[in-house]
Length: 467
Image (tube, rainbow, N blue to C red; front, side, top):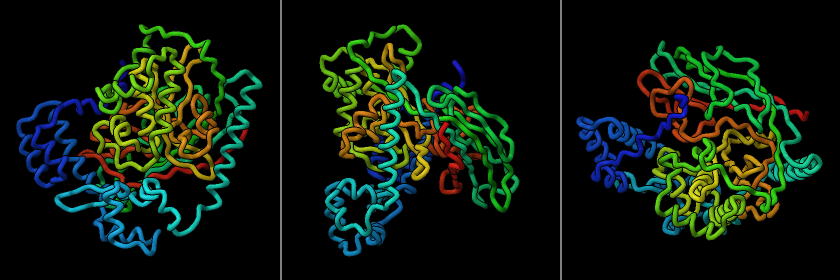
């Protein structure tokens, strides 16, 4: 097994001491830190790593929940000028304002404002401004692209069609003073994986030259750089091109076949990958309830898709490192961002015996590019099909999206990852800023990881061309 198959979160299997767990759950972080430091004196192997991770997570909790209620009120008044303090208390009790008690004080999530309007949609009428024209143009262009992909695929009997050539420049800039001058920075920038979605990927230029470009099939592919930190900070960039294709296939459930359950593919993609793809009692019971007596693999996946896209609403998430089990969190709370919805779909499919896997990187629509995660599931004899629960969510109110994004994809994608929590090549030595996914990249130096607050990532689409 290649070294990069290592699950960088396996240490999460270690059970925290009950006192640490209780203090963390109560938000008593100052006390928890003291207890963890004491426990580290005698901890071994995975428990040591888990305790060190809890210290790292304490810092992240504070970063993700930066606002007092007074500060949250001021920020919200930029969107709802006449909002009153007592209204915040009402929305807090209703669960519309994401918050956490930290050392006895209510602290509010960094991205609480958009979540408020998703969780309490009746407040949208009080919000300043209307949705910009670019958003409407993007929706219209997306539907047009989907219609063209469907038509082109039907002409050839289904499959990958309508290739787009992208030229992209990705860069990382570490801020001055992040590490002492003269120290070596280690930087990983995501690269597209070669495969069915991307039949061609080519690095064009970079500064400095990367020391290592991971293999084309690496599950979390990167270009690796080493830079010397200076008083002005440090920056590296890479320019590359890739082809991305749309995909559409009409599946006849009557033609679906059973799996070779002894195959590597089946074993790998129906197994657990803890902590976020874990077959907990709650998720097993949910999968059984959703799938019922259905035996056809494609229809099993369809039932799971319908449950996720009808029951889970989109909201921004906190740092993925702050969830103990993302798929169970989404199932219990019926909310989550694109990656969280994809993880739930994957986990339920695997429990039901349908091979499923992660795929992520960027949604590369030129007008509105952004980081994005989705999924794939495998059906014989059709192969790997796509599933994008957040794009196909029924809360969009557009049935065509729900139908298309179960099985198909429009081709506005840059897929760097096909696995969660996979080790890089070369491996990262310290905890990652995102221990699950990799869309912006990662930075570290000899004494530890560098978090997002001390470096910046830029992703620019330089050219998009139809082939």
